[in-house]
Image (cartoon, rainbow, N blue to C red; front, side, top):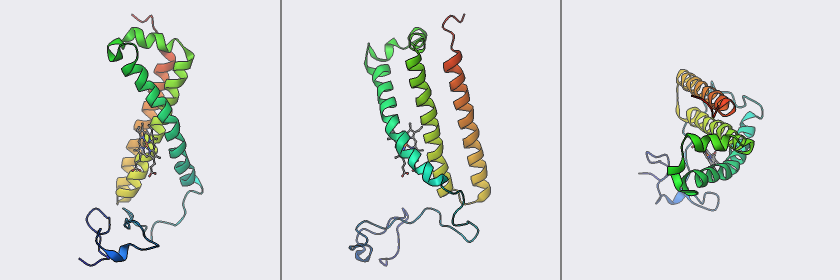
Length: 160
Ligand code: HEM
């Protein structure tokens, strides 16, 4: 194999000396999907930069929200065995936990959806495939966010 060839994973051969140097201290990784003549250089202004920043910021906030959530649900006060209708009703009676769960829902959904949008853009080669996959993704995202938000705010502890 010549040193300029890449392996199936898209990462250059570890032994290939010419891939390394002062300018290339790490293996070169090929872009999963290259731009073509049909794809314009810039498309949506600063949207991609905002999306990039959002992934970092939402990731930091999610660490606190998700780890706190797991700690309370799985470890404190007897672990999972305490979780039931009464436990959920008790927590959602408090606006603090309503806002906590709402923020976790929105951030996790938007973060996960934007991450998948990137994956689809990178790996789905046909424009039609990207259209359908992203259509499905956005539909599922909007549906889940709306349904979850509705449940958090309309939850009735006295339901029979
Ligand atoms: C708990 C804290 C989390 C942190 C700190 C975090 C951080 C990040 C960061 C920084 C990225 C961008 C990576 C890149 O652009 O190369 C990313 C990507 C992604 N995240 Fe998260 N994330 C968290 C939670 C989640 C959750 C809850 C989900 C699912 C709902 C999720 C799904 C994704 C997906 C699908 C991607 C795209 C992966 C890719 O581009 O290869 N993450 N995450």
